[in-house]
Length: 374
Image (cartoon, rainbow, N blue to C red):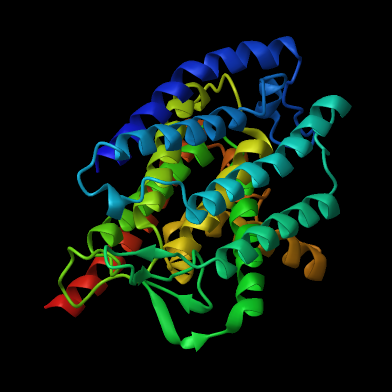
């Protein structure tokens, strides 16, 4: 727990104090956010606000991860905590950094062209597929080599699983490595686009991501305390995952970094995360679902992202089949803007929805544990 707290604190402070510097730098570079002309009229006042702020919390998360590992060296059970960086960290941070890199290219092109178009849909799609495929392969083809004092293997788990999972792996849903990589690619694409579509109002995606990442930090730390590979854990019921403390550390660091960024990103936002941050967070959230073996729980934990994504899907299907729109505008948050809701009201109420999804998911996760230990 000490290492996770250190990582959260370091990430928060770096993000909190680094973001104003980023605001000044991006302002000087004229890296302002282009605003769509067809969007809500009230958004035109945000034109020129610095974007690409996701760079800040991505860097803060990586630095905080290193700080958390330094804290691990002081723990008496360091051999269980795994002081050395792992494949799990490579996969999770890699998904965050390289998904963020795809978003950075998109943001850079928007700024350079002074247009909201950015990277074309095909280019963004290919980037997401490539990132998901590379780290999906790494997650499934590099098992752990943890050994006890006698040299016997205590954990041979991979970061990902060849079995679909809800609260844990579902043995009846074994699908093999190739299909699992495809599933991982799909989850990465769904999560990155879900966060990206949610990032339309000041602080909305950032606040929702804090809740989701906080939930994964709790799930992963609980798995660490009830870990099958821990020789000190003697109960029969445990979690067969890889490096849960690493997962908790990274999730906590990212949540802390987002809280620091939210200080400057909340209404009225002085900086936007841009596609850099939205895709980076989405990639990390996808990695969290994969590594904690809770892939089918993700739509509940990230319920707000699902609702907003589905509003876009419904709008497109309705317009193309009937020529009519279900919503005044999609994604859903803009529908309520055009209905006269204030931006702050929409953000707070959508945060409540995000919190409900997280609470339900955590309740399901914990109730499954209770049902099997009593």
